[in-house]
Amino acid sequence: MSKKAIILAAGKGERLRPITSTRPKPSIPIGGEPIICKHIRALSTVADSIVVVVGYMKEKLIESVELCKEYDPNISRITIKLVDQQQELGTGHAVKTGLQEIVKDENLDEIIIAYGDVYLPHRKYVEFLDRDGEILASVVDNPWEYGVLLVEHGLVKGVIEKPRRGEEPSKLVFSGLLKMNRIDIDSLDGLRLSPRGEYELTDAIGVIGTKRGLKPYTLDRGLWTDVGRPWDLLEANSRAILECIENNCWNSENYNLRESDNGELSVLHKESIVERNSVIYGPVAIEAHARLKPYAFIRDFTLLYRNTVAGAHTEIKNSMLLENAKVPHQSYIGDSIIGEYSNLGASTQTANLRFDDKPVKMTIKDKRVSTGRRKMGAIIGAHVKTGIGVLIYPGVKIGAYSWIYPGCVVSRDVPDRTVMKCNS
Image 1: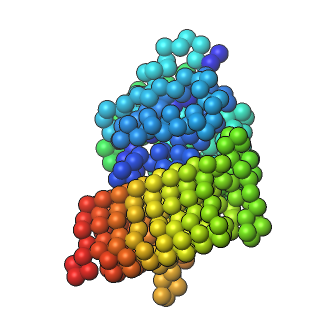
Image 2: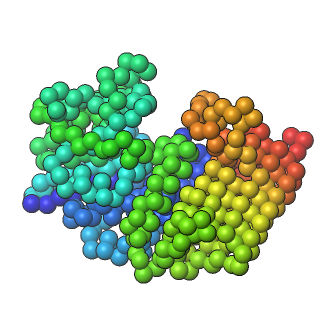
Image 3: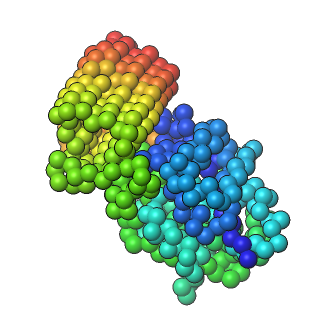
């Protein structure tokens, strides 16, 4: 009998804009590698083939899947096929698209469905795959933002998608991993469009639950992260860095574990460059060809991804610099994400704390929402340029390909492809 996996990776990730203006969510690196690589590595321990359902910016995902093989050469032993969803008709439709590639296997015994934008530690991921649990569940403090599981006599009977706050039956939510057998495939045939105009996988879970029930596998609190919003991305990155250090990273031939200046361990790629008098307060992850200039100060839970630069006298704390981003000198980047190929002028400063010490707010899909974080900096898209002396307020987003003129104070979000002058 064979096991096969489907990774759902076709969504636009609109809540993560402007980071997703130039890349799909599963291609965003956390802890040093694209999110999708973490799924492929775990699924490859049990599945003989993986179908990745793509759509938005599929070329970027193709590049990321190839990159996964560099992090873990063992991935090359399994078959990975990318299939275009063609139409954005929801997770249920995406699963059906993926199934077309695997149902012809007469020996097919189990299908594993994985949402490509969630993070959990590799050890727990593999535990779920190895054990008899069929649906991954997590206890959260904000269940109204997710699909809440209906459990009767120890079995999942259905999912209530984003119930009204205060009306959720429990705090146990669906966490993006599901096991189906061949008989369960029929549950996808009768799906109807949801109120938001999509075919939902959670409706299929309800059909399966009504027929036979699904055994939940419940994670310990705090292990699962739904990478849906910018602050979730920072949280997942922090956890992924710790996991990488704990497991001596993915391919130890290319990485070194190093004691940082504060005594904590950090992971450095052997082709990274750490110049004299730079300081690292771990845990941090520094990837291939990342460069720390003299007197750069890199603090806990920072990711310096490929070909990034932290300039002289620059301080970076709990932040992510995506590939080829440069923060040349005398800048402060705190609790922020800097998109690929962005270049920040000297003395660019990101504020990460409100004057009134309240949680920082951010605009997500035209709504002001609390991040729940006392400290939250800027989200800067790809190919952004700032002039010298630019100051950026907490929770501000600067869109991809935008230019910010020298000396500007950025107190509001800046759309993609905008030129902001100080008198604008």
